[in-house]
Length: 219
Image 1 (cartoon, rainbow, N blue to C red):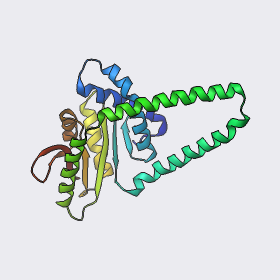
Image 2: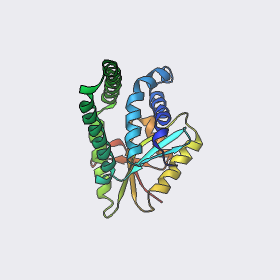
Image 3: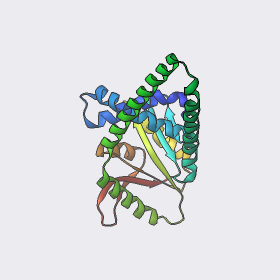
């Protein structure tokens, strides 16, 4: 089932716990709380783009075709946010002191939320890994001339269940037409195992170096 905006908070919590559990079974709740703002923003972006599917509130997967269409919804959302900010600036001169205090508190909360999300995102970054993954995906795409490609940008479930893996595989089969390519970038070896159960296989760079990139041709 395709996720909606009202599903985002619960799905982001599923993703936050799933990501946190990959590192260590101890302290999952604490790490999930820290990572939640980052996951909420990521989930909201995918929902707005129409690229997020869910199984109840137990598992989620993002699938879409890279390109301008995938950025269009995000661009529209950015324009709406900018318009709202301009409207706020125009309203401030006529606002009462009590209203201004409320606005300042809300803005402070939003800034803290964004700062935590940014710190978590930076912590997830790995330039060398991303470079190798990108190289492997490029090599793989060249081996499939004439194919269209879909990207799985998010796959998370907590706890892991066979029903969740079945959901992920069925979502890929539903969204990606037979004979088209689908790829992703795993975050870790544990995460790669999850994608493997969803039907994807590891990709290598041109020199044969193993990576966390994965791909497959849809059945």
